Length: 465
Image (cartoon, rainbow, N blue to C red; front, side):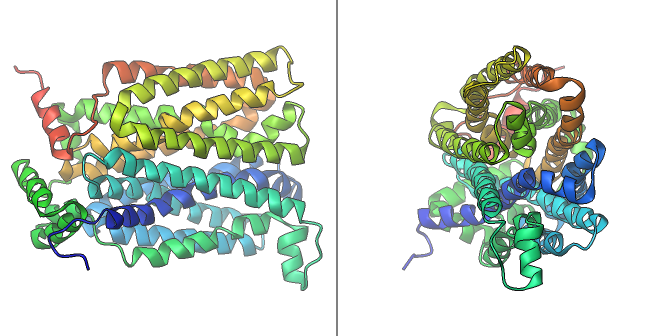
């Protein structure tokens, strides 16, 4: 039996894995849409604007969810807000499956978006606060790994359901969901992981740093001891007290000169990670691959391959981020992504669509994103902000991410129609490039540093008058 003053690595991993289920649902919900777009477009006779609205309405919900989740998580705790997100996921999945009209479908997509927005902010925040500094990069990367697994499971389930859409099902309702309007089954399957996430959250503890922020030192000490042992727990509590224990959650704190650089990183890095085009591939991958000469079934199969590459290369970040650091992964991954996007644009421009070349370079782009932008962005934005305003700051950073995501989701169909595939990918390359400058000039290396040490870094780097 685990004694009170002993640490448990299993406990750390299990709690972080539960929190990472928010990432799984985030990935599943955002990727499952790629297989439904064509069917919903046909069933409801949607034009390009309607198609974009169907995809991006959930992203609008994400933006609203993020706006409120920071304040709520700072006031009421990380755990209760994660529970709310799980409930929203569950309601959305069941509602989309049973929606009686396009308006109802959009409404439940918006509800799901609220859940995604909340989970996308609070899950990595919770993990970053829960994890010891030497494991923090790996643990937060588990969130991105769960996200990529959610994406690939969505692709597999979409492909499976499409291949079995002509099967005969007993009962008119089941036949409609799984055959006549198979997109209902695609969206409804999200209810299973949402229910697992919801019930699992009731057995995990609150974030120890949030407890310290609220003056519950005894409860925080018990959790920290179980995570990393009594000696490390006392060190963490001492470091927290040295930084000041006052509960300062005002947005004004972030605009003080000492934190302006952190705020700039927190706003720009998530935004750039989205306008590089990753979700154009996630949302509209089958359509892009069809333009490259693939049939629908082959395009869905190619989308599964994209998802698998995303998962595999996320492991590169998990195994290296706490050894090599955040900056080297960003330089290598962002640079590779820019090159891959430029080459994809050239291939489309020269009409070299026969053979596997476009898919190969799309996979190269996904691989570069998966070990850099994807996980490293979440790690950095979970580290760079001070304890007292971390929830509010993370909500701003995640809001920036979802604004970029919304723009890509809404504009990609129109860009593909008006600009063509070549210029669409070249624009993504142009939008991706500033992340190299951001990494070089502004982002500090945070490998192995405690959250309090990182906060101290900003104070010590403040220019003296």
